[in-house]
Amino acid sequence: MKKTLLLLLILISSKIFATDVSGNVFLDNLTDFSNCLITFTPVSPSAVQAQTTSQSNGNFIANLANGVYNIKYEKSGYQTYELLNVFVSTALVLNNVTLSSNNLILVSGNVSGAWTKGNTYKVTGDIIVPFGQTLTIEKGVEIKFDGYYSLTVNGTILANGSKDNYIKFTSAKAIPTNQDWNQITINSTTTSIMDYCIIEYGKIYDINNNYESFININGNFNLTNSIIRNSNKEAIRTRSSSNGNVNIINNKIYNCSYGILSGGTGKIIIRNNEVHDNTLFGIYIGMDSNSIIVEGNTVYNCNYMGILVSSNIRVERNIVFNNKYYGIFTEYSKPTIVNNTVMFNQNGIGLYDNETFKITNPIINSNIITNNLYYGIHSQGVNKPDSVSYNLIYNNGSGVGNLLPVGVGSVITVNKNNIPSDAYYNIFVDPEFESTIQTESTFCSLRSDSPAVNAGDPSIIVWNGTIVDIGAKELGGNLSTGVITKPKVTSVKVFPNPTTNYLSFETNENSAFDSIKFFDINGKNIDEIKLNESTSSYQWKTPANLNKGAYLYIIMNGKSVIDSGKFIKI
Image (cartoon, rainbow, N blue to C red; front, side, top):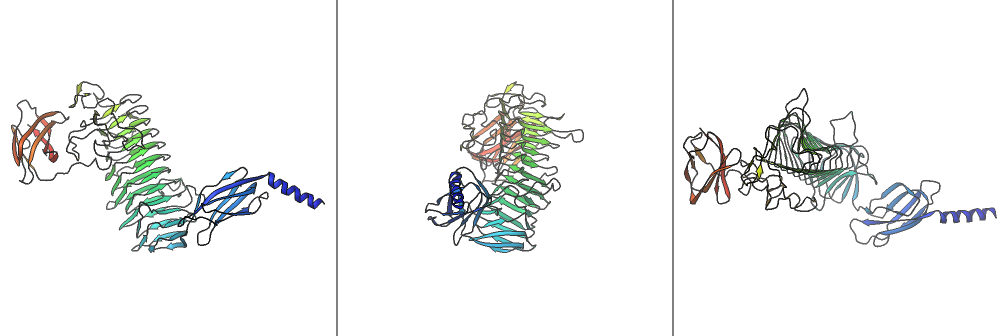
């Protein structure tokens, strides 16, 4: 009688303290997801073993006694998937699970040859591509690290995924974290490639191992069209040697401590990347790294600074917004900051120096600096920018800047478009963007009537043959293709230079021109020659009132730029 009563009480209790657990399980190569087995194995004493199967649409439901369970998903021909220590106390909907039909291959030690689609490679120890050998990875392959292991490439890796079939380097854990495996290190003297790859969930922060990141690049490497995310450390660190070449182009980099930390003396191109939501910096350029190109990137939502520059490089055509302290920050260097759009940060462009390094003198040219919470340009030390010219600076909470060259910010004239400006042709009006909403295709594009159109530095000639617009996006172009300076297409003789009374222009017969524009060094138009028909030679008489000094010319045929340059009047 007592045993019967006890059994009855247990049954009643299990019904009272029970919960529905539901979810979906899919198969990666079928549309009928039925008969996947889901097993709930007790971990805590209160839990009770249970099983259920999925319906054709993948849905399943089980009524479980409250407690802690390990949950296993299984189907013949597919890899098993397991969730550990799931606490069940109220109605619970589990995340969707997709079972992989790939074959599972365990790898460790030296690796080379081909890793082919249809396989998942589970890394059970450090793996190395030896010197002189190549590892080729086909699109769609998964590499899962089952512990704190690394991939070191001393030879060559060729990992070419596709837009609809990425190669994935990831954690083997069912619920991954940002420190599950170690890193990828590229030491290649040949060129290694990762294109359309996902690299995620790796690298523990270690204060005693400060020079190691999630992806370490010490050799020749092209990283393109890839996603790098969810690391406790820097996503990418470059330390290329003087003869090394690194291209980091068109990637998405987020949820790391730094996005890109770049140094070394090699040629490094950082272009057209989307870098966002990192806990410290978006892009950090170290000292003495003067062969780095930082161009066309979009950097936002970083919890310290968007772009920090400590070298004398060119920072061009980037959109930098909504970063906590500074959009672009310079220290101990003289970079050229040109044609960027910097907005919605605490400060737009910042300078820092100290008693040891008093050399922070950036050139700030043709940027849009707008809607920053405090200063447009802010100096933390005693140094000021070397020059501030042709910028559009508008609606910054604390004004244009706190330590600037004499005359910056004082409206005393108009630029060539008759917009009120200071002595350096900086203007202080609304840039008139098409949109400031990032998800829209017209984000940071200029309206056709924007005061920034054709108001930049006249010595910068762009693809459409006009004077450059202010800001990152050229009207009619875009961040990546509307920014290319028009190359010279022919040899042009311009003489005598320096000159006193006249300047002759001569080209070959196949490169005729029909107009020449002349500007002073501040961009003011001083003369324009328009010919009735194209010619290969022309002699321009200098105006009688032209003062001694440096001037600019642009030679055009229709809308095409033939050549541009500088001449001296003596």
